[in-house]
Every structure is written in C-alpha cells, then in structure tokens.
Image (cartoon, rainbow, N blue to C red):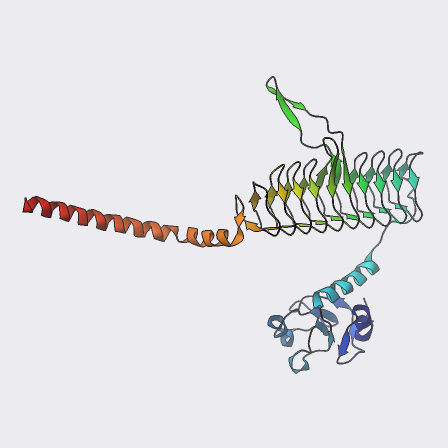
Length: 350
C-alpha cells in the first residue's frame, strides 16, 4: 500500500483534516503503529492514546485533540477501516488463474467464464462451476455439485456430492461440506449406520471458516441462509437449518435438526441441542448450552443456558459461596450454643 491521505479519504468517503498529501504505507493498531501507518479510533478512550502513537494518520469521527496527527473524519471508523483492509487484501491476493495442468475435470462438468482451478483440483461428474469461481489447489468437488458465480474456495476444501453453494461465498481451507451426518442406531450390541442421502445448501454471501464441517442431511437438506458468517472449527449437524445473517463463532456446535432463526449470534463454544428452535435475533453467550427452544430476541448464557442477567447474578453469587458457607457455619454454631444455653436454663428452672 502506498497512497495519500486524500486518496484513502476518497475510498472511504471521508473528509481530510490536516495534510492530504501524507503518505500511508500500511495499517496497524494505535500502539503498534510505525511511521506511515494508518490507525483507527472508535471512541475517545482510545483517542487519548494518539499522542503516544507513531502513526501517520487516523480514521476517526472527530479531529484528534491538539491535532496530534492528520485524520480522515468518517461517521463509522470501523466500516471505513474495513474498506481500507479490503483494498489492501485485493492488492495482496494471488488467486489461481486459468486451469492448472494437473486439475482433473469430468467431461460432464460445466465450467463458466473466468473460472480458475488451481493445482490438483478435482471436479466431479455433472457439476456446475459458475462464472468467476476460484478453486484453490487441492479442492475436491464431488458429483452434481453447484457453485455460484464469484465464489472463492480455498485449499483442500471438500464439497461432497449434491452440495449447492451460492454466489459470492468464501469457504476457507480444510473445510468439509456434505460429509455424512452422524446417524447410527443400536442393533444387537453394535451401532448400525443410517445412510445419509440428503444434501447441503449454502445460500449467497456466506463465509465459512477453516476446519468447519457442515453435514449432509439424512434426507432433505441441511441449509445455511444467505449472509451468514461461520468461524473456524464449527460443527453443523445433519438437517440443521441456519437462518440469514447469523454469526457463529469458533467451536460452536449445532446438533442435528436444530433450527436457528435469522440474525442469531452464537458466541465461541456455544452449543445447541438437536431438534430445538432458536428464535430470530437471539444471542447465546460463550460456552452457553441451549437445551430447550428459545423465543425470539432472547439473550442467554451459561449451562444450561438461561437469561443472561440471571446467569450473571448467579455467577456473582457463586463467587461468594465460600464466604457464605463460612458465615452459615458460624451462625449454626451460635444457634447451637443458644439452644444449648436455653436447654440448660430450662433444666435449672425445673
């Protein structure tokens, strides 16, 4: 990156405060910044630290105190910073181009325009790859898979047969979509496998992190709604349905046939038991375990997950338990002494 402050202001639709000719060569955090770096401040608590920073300029909502450094003024610094990062990412990308000589493509597969297949990509029979799709090295596309236009799939991802991927999706390295759902029944002292003959449907603009697994349905489909973002190491069980514009952080586990509404947020390590419904707009805290269906707009945490404020008060109470136990024991001893004294007084009176 090597841009003037004026050029970046145009990119983020901001207003320059200070020298528009300042050169920006990178981005960084406030205290980690080096000369030439652009930083971002979202509130006054961090703005106070700009005087200690070596940054060349800042994205902020208002000019720094004392005009410490030049600024680009924007209503939403987080969004503006994301636009700058997107600009840098696009410049740094080294996507595969064309069809690598080691790629294996079935004769019955159909490739759109501008498709790029990296080394050792395999595309199965009757699969359709949309315009502008990029498959990094080692991607395996099974039979009858559909991939929408402008989707990018990073190295060593596996898409099992009949999987459908929407447009503009990002699927990160080593993820598996369409593996068998976890279905077994006990029979004569052994576990008998239940065949999984459904599929997975990923709608448009979904991003899925590395080492995540989305299992195919036993029958019917496992579906992830458009705009949903899924972190690394997430497990989504067979026949689960994830709504639109949800966020699932790392290590989340969704059991089979769970239904997750739209705009749901699941923090790191949260789990949802099978066959439950999580209402629209619900938030589940980190490591929360949901064992019953949840109405829309709920905020839950803990295990089993309960109202977050109730759980927070319970956590505070748990911290006080040792002191409370000592106090109860003291009161028991005092009560015992009082009862003993009363008993002796009664006997003396007799």
